[in-house]
Image (tube, rainbow, N blue to C red; front, side):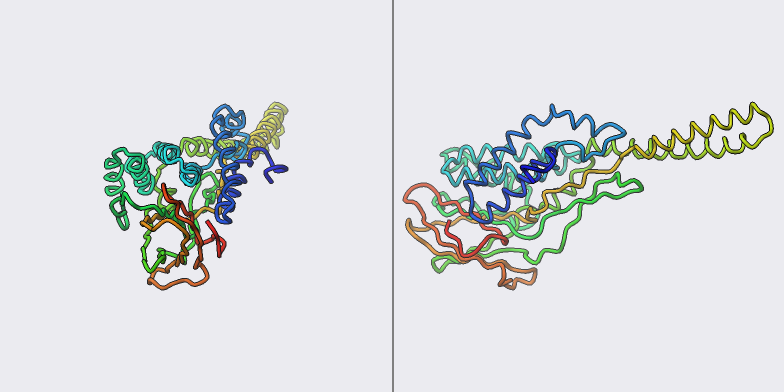
Length: 351
């Protein structure tokens, strides 16, 4: 689909592919794909398709896909993880900050730039770089709506980035499908536990992508689509009125009335055609293999090889066996080992 599908969907398929590559441990390929996404979306504001999507006669899905803010956040978030895997904590921090910027244009400013995990990782990266990350840590504490992230451990050298649960999906509603809505399937997983070297570390959700998708308020495009819907309804009604009025006039014996009636019918038909050509449908294309929950855990381990078991738990705290992951990894003598684990990751895996 990236190669042969519509060019406007290229970023959508690259995003989906990047998430799948992360879960397969194909991190070099994920880097390549995400870099292309970020390069493409960086110049998307000049794309002519965006202008067409705002017109009455082209659907919103005409525009090149860049995703809603929560989707753009995840592009930077995944790229930040990969930078940290490469030992580039400074670039990772830059990605986490860029991700937060994507979340800053919320209509309801109460929920602007309120990702707990982004601020927490910003502060952690700053601390690892020998800088002060306390402000970012305090923001993460204030934003926490579930369990608060733990204080930083300066000696932690095994960093687990975890994700689980099915993410949000989009659908169009309203008389003309002009309203963009979000839904989510029930998650069989609500938390995770990491077992390594006789230690157990619990990982609760820090962020909920469904919450992020549904707390941003309206989009500029929503107002455009609403106006399209009003125009479509108005021209449809005007067409009906003209056709009915014209038909009544055309039945009169007066030649002038007949001519006026035929003219009204013609105008009504044109108005109906214009109405039928108006496309107010919301763009429901979605990065549909995102997770719902983001979590993180860090611990200190001696350098060398280790084996970890990551269990995912349901709402009652019970283990969901089909999601359990077995991981082999090596902690370096200096720096950190970064591990990415999804409930959809392959297992066993060497990271």
